[in-house]
Image (cartoon, rainbow, N blue to C red; front, side, top):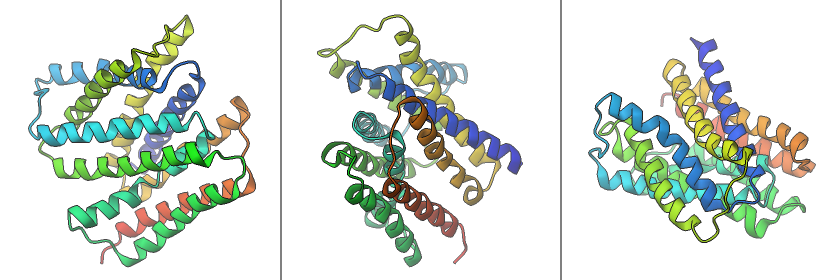
Length: 280
């Protein structure tokens, strides 16, 4: 079971990586148009699933479903925007600090407890962000880093909202809400700066939803068949895959400081995942 779970997580990491790469390559399109196609592509999977299984599209916790979708839309838009300014591996690493914000919001709104040592691990991860900000002269901190940080903050709100929804709604209903709202809002905001895709650009744009859907699907499968504290750290393979492809495809440059920062982020978050599963 462990071997299968790891295989699923590797597939998920590769799918997320390809999504990042294709978003990065779509320089001639504005971020809202990219969000539109990313979301539209996933609806080809979520809608048929819900209709086939006769699951209500409206869901139960409708207010929370809309809230989760708006938070997710903001997070996704800002993350895609950050890819236009900073190296992919850096953007992905910063996005992964979302659990720090989620822990803070959970403490504030859900009154959940956070182990003292978790704050130490969060500190290690955030130190990685500060190193990326302060020591890598090649980064455009005023734009790319800030977009990625705010994206992570809203991703943290997404986690909290999903926790509030709990088992009241099917996971595909949650994703479907997100994709419908993102398609509508992304499409409306994209109208003014719309660029008509040509040739293979259609294929690349429509593939965004495919990669996004299967990345989430296989990550879910991995979590279902393997223990979270063992499997979850494998999701950070996305950072490694993204850095490698960024170096080869986009000729991205990573300084020693930026690599140290990325390593600290991964280390802090991996330790946090591990300690969360240790009984008190």
